[in-house]
Amino acid sequence: MSLYQLSKFLYVLNRDDGAKARFREDAQAATRDYALSDEERKALVDRDIGLLYVLGVNGQILMHFAAFCGIAWADYLQQMRDGVTRYGPVRAGLYAMTTGTDEKVAGV
Amino acid sequence: MTLVFTGICSHAPGMTARADLAPPEQKDTLYAAMDGIRQAIADTKPDAIMVVAAEHFANFFMNNMPAYAVGMGERYKGPIEDPEWLRIPVREAKGNPDLARRLVAEMLNTVDVAYCEEWQFDHGIIVPLHFLDPHNELPVIPVNINCQGPPLTPLKRAWAFGEAIRRAADSVPERIALVATGGISHWPATPDSGKINEEWDRDFLDRWLSNDRDRLLAYSDEETYREAGQGGFEIRTFIAAAAAAGGKGTLQYFQPIPIFAVSCTVATMEIA
Image 1 (cartoon, rainbow over the protein chains, first blue to last red):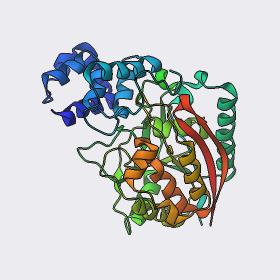
Image 2: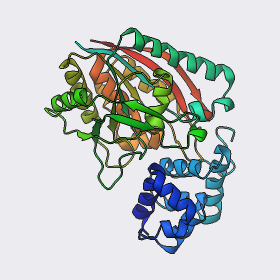
Image 3: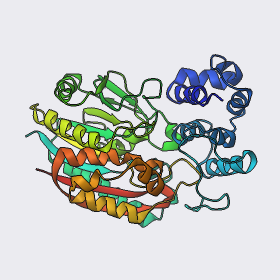
C-alpha cells in the first residue's frame, strides 16, 4: 500500500507537461522512480480510473488525470462506479462513494 | 482603506466544462451574476485582484503542505487541466511581486503564510478569473487555504487569516479587490458529483450574509464532512472573506445546479 506514492505520481503528472509527455510515451517507464505496488503501477499504466478511485486517490487528482486521458465526464463517473462494483468500496481517503452504483444524482 | 471589494463565488469546473449540460436558464442567470460582479469589481478600479482559493493539487501536495499560501510571482499560468476539457484557454496572468511582498510581510505579523514565486492555476482560480477578468487585464495575487489535505487549518484560523488579509490590504496604497472562491456542500469529482445539501448551504449562507462570526466558526470538520461532503471544507475561503470585509453580505445568486456539482453562489459583502 503506497497511496502517497501513487497520488504523488499523479500530482506531478497533472501539473507538468514534461511528465505528461513521458507518460504518453512510455507509461511503465514513467512510473519507475515511484515505490508502487504492482496493482498501483498497473492501474496507472492501464489508466484504470475505477481502480485508482478504489485505491483512494483524491478525487481532484483523479479528475484532472481523467481529463488528461480524454475521458468524458459521464464516462469518468461511470468508470468510478464500475470500479467500486468490480474492486469493492473505496479503501482510503476522503472521496468515498456515498451514492449507489445505479444512482446518478446529476443525471449522468 | 484600500480593500475596495469583497465577494465570493463558486469555481466549479462544470460551470465551463459542462456548461451545455445545465438547464440554459440556470446557466444564463449564473453567468449574468458572475458578469455582475465582474462589473462591480471593475467599477472599484482595482490595482490587483486577490483570489482566495482552495486549490486542488496544482501547486501544493502532502510533501510540503502550507495551510496558507500567497503568490509572489511575476506571472502565473493556467489552467493545468486540459483546456479543451475545462473549455478555458491557457492564459498567463501577470502578478505583482512587489505588492505581494508587502502584503505577505504584513500578514506575517499574525499568520505564518507561505509565499510562492511559482504558482500554477487550476480551475479553483482560473474559473473565477475567466468570468471576472475575461481579458486577462488585472494583476493577480493568488492566495490558497489548504482545504484538501487534512489536517486542515481550523476555522478560527481561517478567520484570523481573513483579518490578516484585511490588515495587509489596508496597509498598502494599491486598491485590492478580494474574491474568495469555494463550494458550500459538494461531493466533487466522485460518482456522488451532483449531490447537494441545499438546506445546509442556505444555513451556511445565512451565517455568512449576516457575518455571524460565532455561527460561522461553529462547524466541526466531522459535521461538515458528514453533511456537506469533502467539498464542504472549502467554506474556509468564504469565512476568510467575511473576516476581511467585516460587513453584511448581499446574495447575488444562489442555485443548486447538480451538473455543476454545487449550489452555485455569487455574493458580495460590505467592507466595514
